[in-house]
Length: 327
Image 1 (cartoon, helix red, strand yellow):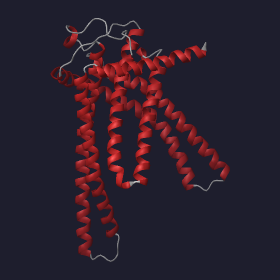
Image 2 (image 1 turned 60 degrees about the vertical axis):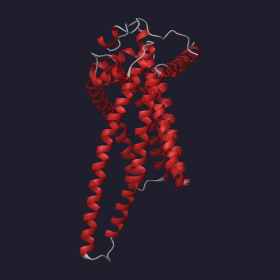
Image 3 (image 1 turned 90 degrees about the vertical axis):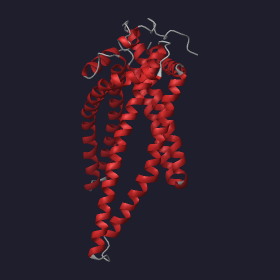
Image 4 (image 1 turned 90 degrees about the horizontal axis):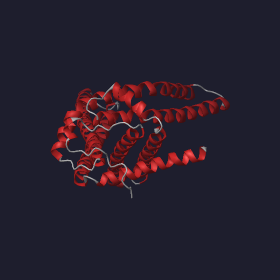
């Protein structure tokens, strides 16, 4: 019986993946436009880091080393210190501006991916104008929900992080016997695994709440989190597996880039740019998959599916395209 249930749950994940691939092909031009915009902005951010931030940071490090040199005169030290401060303010200012723009763009693209996926499930062609209208309209809801999700993330993360920091502090600053060190290392590994599992498990509700805030006009913040918790009952394993696969894939991409940057530093920019683009497409697929999961959760609970209130009611079919054959 347990084997059958595990097999059934595995099939549920496969269904979500297949459904996500299918809905990405609907509204193809719009999805392609969203993907292109995201790829361009992600590529620009990476190249900005590679050709501006990285050299500037290296220059600052070199100047700091020179400043520590005793061979410099007072005037040279003063000029060098002024130059370091100027570079630091430029670096901080530009980084903050880029992070803000990047966060807003990512939010826009994530909302666009979710909403376009939702409309695709209804078989409804979505215009770029209508998409922009909906993104602007839902931005406040999504921002409030994201803020609540971040608060929950911090609450979950701090206890595990505190334990890991304490263990790290003990291992570094105390001369413990080998047996004690082995015990602490084992505890560190165990807490890292348990913490990761808990975060992946809890984030099923958080991501689903994000989707709800985009799709449902009158549900966001704490209400979206509460609704997501109730809605995902019976399909939480599907969300957990999606989270695990998504994070594992991104971890592999990061490690591949790390290895390439270490062994072949001359190729790190080209390979890094390629891997960043793959990671972005994976993120798009992830939000599309969670949109499909949201609709399946609503369907399994027998709830009526609402798609954005009055904006789409006149054009959307009464039954979403969840029961079509998925190739």
